[in-house]
Amino acid sequence: MQTVVLATGNAGKIREMADILQPHGWQVKAQAEFFQDEAEETGLSFIENAIQKARFAARKTGLPAIADDSGIEVSALRGMPGIYSARYSQDIHGADADDETNLQKLLDELTQVDDHQRQASYYCAMVYVEHADDPTPVIGLGRWYGEILREKRGDGGFGYDPIFWLEEFNKTAAELDKEQKNRVSHRAQALNALVMQLRRGA
Image (cartoon, rainbow, N blue to C red; front, side):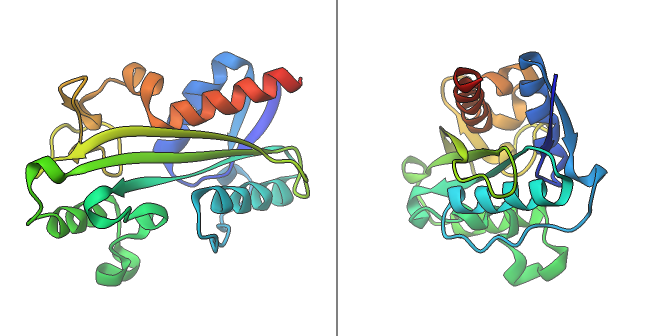
């Protein structure tokens, strides 16, 4: 069983990624078991940021690393919050910004947007590096389409899940059970694409 460090401090991401990876025979460890500092995210894309985080975790631990960078892109906002999804409300709340303040800022910015123009998608770039200087990172991508509601529904998931409406399920992402979400989410798509590539190269 191969050990890999998950390069994230987000407990929700760790749970989802571990649930998806373990059936494939991976032993996963959170980066918090080794270190507390975070990689500097200076990229202009999800892929760039994911590579930076994976290299950082691999260098700190000496283990292979998997990192994701993900966020929500809203068509009416020209793709924002995008790579800034996790820190979207820092301009208002500073260090106190969190999932709740990010979600509320997004709702506030969409107040005047008609219901039929609230399309959005979750996007995820998932990266595996064998070591910190790996010249050929493996990349898996996923995109999950939905719409943004005007108020929260459901208490599962994290991030923007309570306002991310999925027509095919007639539910928000926060109303899906864990098994459903881990089959169809952007993170599941990206991680499964990554695992398929790694298995081919094994």
